[in-house]
Image 1: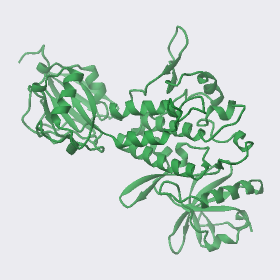
Image 2: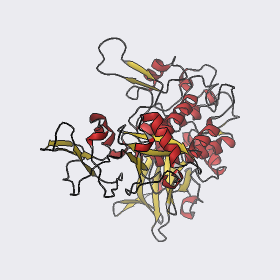
Image 3: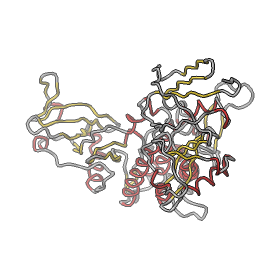
Length: 465
């Protein structure tokens, strides 16, 4: 009995036995996945129905691969319900991951320039663990992309899981299988298209690198507006240091293609983390697939280096003098005085003139352990450093404007700036303030990422009261 002949409509919904289709979750080259709910028990499962008899062999291979998987960051198989066992069609029953896909998360407007640092860290850790596990099982995924990473709520936490092993293959299969064109063209490794001697497990390192870059920046690393065959041709001879290639649309003289060795500045991760992930991306995005993921000694470090990066903690500090966010690696023993010395080294702000404030506005002493203020959920800064002359903030509530606008109004003695959330770096780049431009307020203040609007009152040096 086939699915098509057994499914019927009731009250506008597709039904099969005691099961009702709640939503379509996606489709691929081999089948479609839908969410089904039991009408009596309310049990929910994701069921992949393979399209036709031609895909039967492929479907059986995917089912066998999934049966071998047992890991917190790989989607789990669930037993086939009794109603579905009588089908002749091949089906795959999986846990339903309630929070949607990584693609859905990236498509949210606030994530257009990448995810917050705490989410980036968690995603990279979970994907690294899941991918390292399936590779330990001698399986290559071959189709890593945001659509194939889902979010599942576990108690009060959300974890990331790998799904869709439709293109999965065992590492020790015949060379013919490792010559097969497989994967999604926007994310597929170049050698899948151009290597005459086939490809290896390192196609997954490339896919992991693409995911890492995209969750940091909001876009793919190499000319994302072009078709795969076009961008691969343009980056074919890039050096190992290059991790991004983009096009300048208005450049009139010479080539408009730019090869970049660093992450774009438009992201929401600390500089300390960005510098480390830049080095890691150079490993993951090597054009030579035989060297990809390896260090100069040709040792595989793609996983160990990511683990080392994510184990480090960085304190993010907003400097009113430098008008920028600073970040420094810290550990359990790092005292504030050490961080002040680093701030002096990077900005020239004398240590004796630095006043460090917590997000609640309290002054932090030099002997304080900086680790106590490390909070990856604070997406603006974990500490704030100002001059002894301080910063004056208004006592009245700001007037609310459109989040996409920046309004400036010049009064008799002050310039009032109302900035939408996430506009702070742009705001301070535009208005470089000297220490004598601001007045100190003795009232504690709090800056959080979730404030829609932040209102600053700044005394201008050329306007004397």
